[in-house]
Length: 280
Image 1 (tube, rainbow, N blue to C red):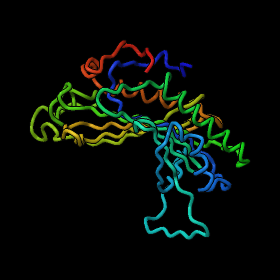
Image 2 (tube, rainbow, N blue to C red; image 1 turned 120 degrees about the vertical axis):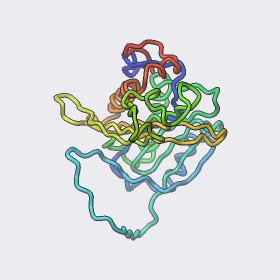
Image 3 (tube, rainbow, N blue to C red; image 1 turned 120 degrees about the horizontal axis):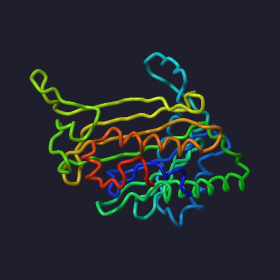
C-alpha cells in the first residue's frame, strides 16, 4: 500500500532520525496493568525488551482553542494506582511499541549512521497497522472493548548536522528558507535560532481537522559533540473515527519540511525530484 506517497518529495538520504505514529482513544477502564503485561506476550518474540513509564496525558487539538486554566498545583487522589504506559522494544532498539489504556504508539529510531530511514509507505505505516491489529485482536479476545480513536499524531524528528552545508548556528539562511540574516549591525547575524510555529490543517470545506507543530532548536549530538539543529514536525488531528489522519498529517509534514529547507540542503540530502513527487 502506498498510503498516498506518489506525489510527495523524496530524498535518498533524509535527516530523519525518528518517526512516531500515535493513536489516542477514549480511556478504556477495563484495561488494567495486568492486561498490559499479558499483552506483551503477543509481541515478546519480536519485542523482547520491556519497560514501564507514567502514562501520557491526553492531548486534543481544539477549534477554537479553549482558554487555559489557572496556573497552580494539581492534586489527585486515586482509589487504585493509575495504569502505567508499557513499552516493548526490539533487540536492536530501533523499533518500539508503547501502550496505555488510552493510547497506542509505534516508534522507529535510527540506530547508527549506517541505518536508513525505512520509509512511511513501505514500512512505518504497514508495521503500525500490523501491530495495532494485534492489539485490537487481544482486546477482542479478552473482551476488553474496542478503542474509539479520538486523535491521531504523526511526528518526524530530524537531525540537521553541521559540516553538511553549514558550519555554525548563525548560518540559518543556508539551511532554512524562512530566515534572512540582517546585513548590518545592529543586530547582525544571529547566534542561533529557536522556533515554535503552528499551522492549521484544513479538511474538506476548509474546516480545521488538525494542527502542524514545527519546533526548531540548536543542540549537540552526544556521541561526537557535533553541533546540529533538531527539527520536530508533529501533525495532530482527526478525520472521522479511524486512522485516516496519519496519511494527511504525514503529507503535511513532508511537504512543509521541503518548503522550510533550502535547495542546497535538498541536494545534500539527495532529493530525487525537485517537484513534489516520490515516496518519502
